[in-house]
Image (cartoon, rainbow over all chains, first blue to last red; front, side):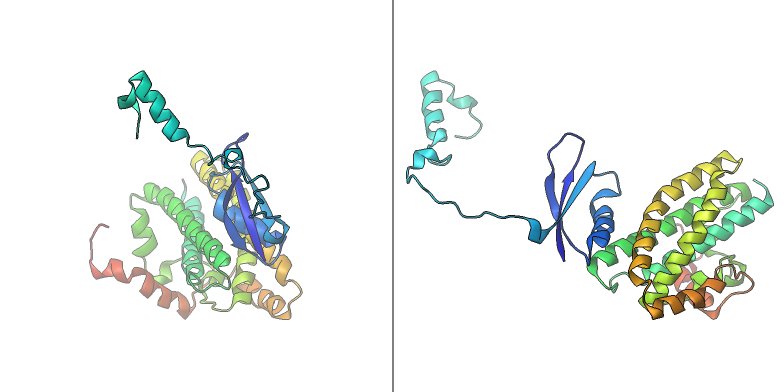
Length: 96
Length: 190
């Protein structure tokens, strides 16, 4: 069985996907996850989740067909460049 | 550190060194990739524990950990028979692991209570890693407890835990492999 392992580096931080492990049951998954992601002080906590328990969504309906509703629909870079040129600070921009 | 304490630490160090070598023989060929990582890491820990123990004894004797670990003859090692065997079947490997960790835990508890602060400190440090080894051993023990092959292996190996009079031929063979590089260039420092 494949388990997905999420680790929290320090208390209070968000859990992030660390990798996956294969184990015959929860007990083995616990021990192997500790070995690979926890026993050297690199994690404050682990979440070990059977892959089958993860609900995955990887397709989204573009229900409005209006690109300005999407984060990539509006070119901030171009607007920023214009604004910088107006303000005369173009040289300060990291990459333009 | 008195002579008796030195002998005891040397005995434990030899156990850990030889078992570390034997366990490492599974590296690359363990039953599952995750187990390969876990068991190899346990093997490496054991050799690290041996190093710490040899260093303590070496200081008391005015020698080095390397000399204690590799420059004695096989007959001079104080390890138990159980760690010497080359076991390339999983049921006996796990049976040895389970038996050894149980005995090692008792021994470490005594060392942690030692009046010698250095010995007690090293034992406490070793025990923190051993806690993981015990967890790993308990996991396999629970998994295999219903298997006849495993139960037979436990019965076969249990008497060898305290068997320290004389050595198996397997120790001499392992010693050849273990010291071949060191013996090839006498006096070299690595």
